[in-house]
Image (cartoon, rainbow over all chains, first blue to last red; front, side):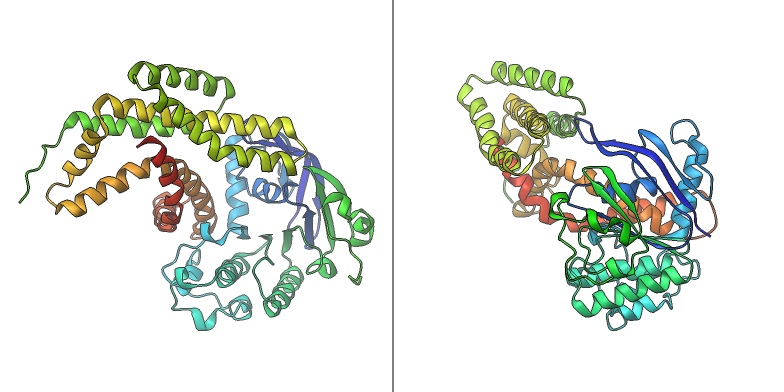
Length: 244
Length: 201
């Protein structure tokens, strides 16, 4: 079972340095879909990348399965934890261009598979990649490249799935497929963290919502608990018309 | 066969120095160092060149390009002091890099530098060697973008390739080669380098 706990997390980035995540705390104790919601620049992507160990932690801890090595004091344990998270996670960052390394779609899907096979994961079919297997990634459209990255992430995910703005560039049928894949991953025991500035595609299937505003955790809880915080005042589209 | 200028080791060394300094100046991390570097570069440029107009043309051109960015940021962002600070440091770095490159090139002469580069490829027909020289010269302005791109691709590759095998030691050669190959997407950013290059030449 995956267990993720973020305590008093502070991340400072940029030049001059600026606090991007400010004293953020939340925990996930069972496989669930966690929607990390916030306007542009609220710190969603930084949070996902920090959990993956890609940003320096200024203060606070991130614990996985109860272990919380501090980045500065326990460098070796921290690196091992980071490596373990990478091995157990599927990741789709916001920009697909940084994540595609294969000469063809099939080659790219084989990355990370010890047997070198194309994954038989339903995501490959659901993301419409079967007819594109022999295509070079450079010839794919923006939406197709995103679908390739998403399929690779789903196929790689064991305990964690990190999806940063996954709905961008996707057409409506693939949005529906993606929602189904996220639900299925959760049901198989994967904790899915979805960073998004939009609520309409994911709200219905989110188990918990972490609402970020200017780097601070404005609210964390079930969709019912967080619902009243979602408003244009925090840079988000109102929830009218979205069913619960 | 046309006469070719001999390959000058001085020109080649100077070019390498310019490239190295560009990388250093564009990656300065602290405000204080950025200000000191800018002051030094400005002084250096004024001492080297008797044509002060050239120095001010570089500064004015960079300000002209970057001021609209600052204005737009100020209109849409609430943290004005942060926006101004970030913009100022960025512009200082750009000006420092451009002024230093200009001063060093003037020391030897831009044609000397071009000869130095193209001379390295003198075994090729001139139209190819001059193109290569042009690409190499402009590529120095792309180096910060290259580093930023490499950082992100290495991070992604380390996650994706890290799943292969059970070892806790990642396959660094594989990760690095994948990340470098991913750089093939970068030429579209070349235009950005050409804009800055135009300020110096």
